[in-house]
Amino acid sequence: MSLPPPNVGVTMLVVDLARLLRRRFEAALLEVETGLTAGEARTLFYVWRYPGQRQSVLAEAMFVEPMTLVGYLDSLERVGLIKRCPDESDRRAKLVQLTPKADPLLENIGIALQSVRAKALEEIPNDQRKTLESLLQTMKDSLLQEVPRGKHK
Image 1 (spheres, rainbow, N blue to C red):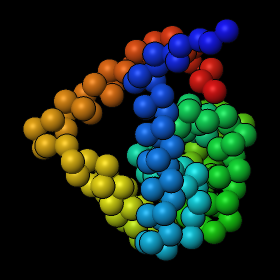
Image 2: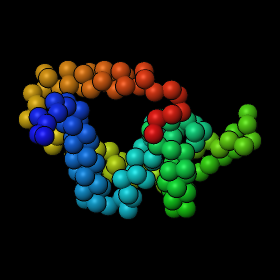
Image 3: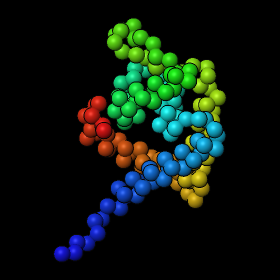
Image 4: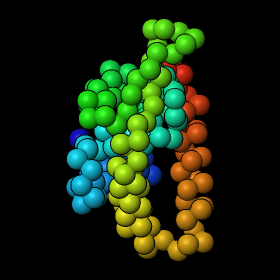
């Protein structure tokens, strides 16, 4: 029996696009010599984006398991880019903060991200870029409505 190919259109396109973007990001990180893996760079970016948050909040924002995040945070803390401080409202929880040593690396991560963004969007007219971003955000929001908080594997 021969089944017709499934019509998944945008689904596989977005999955493939995400993989290509990650590959380009990894290459761009090598060019700006951060010394970080893509996961570590992404974690550092999220600590900058959500300063002073609990590890669990960062894991949720990044859509990674808490133990995955802990590995990245351990690496970043070992090289002095972040510090974990006790949360005064819950001594068991840790708040994650950047150290001044992270500033130049964040700048380089920004350069890498901009390089990937520029390449990905080079064939898309400026007037359509906001529409693309809005549509992708709408897709993300729709999918997040189905996922219970803290359950996004």
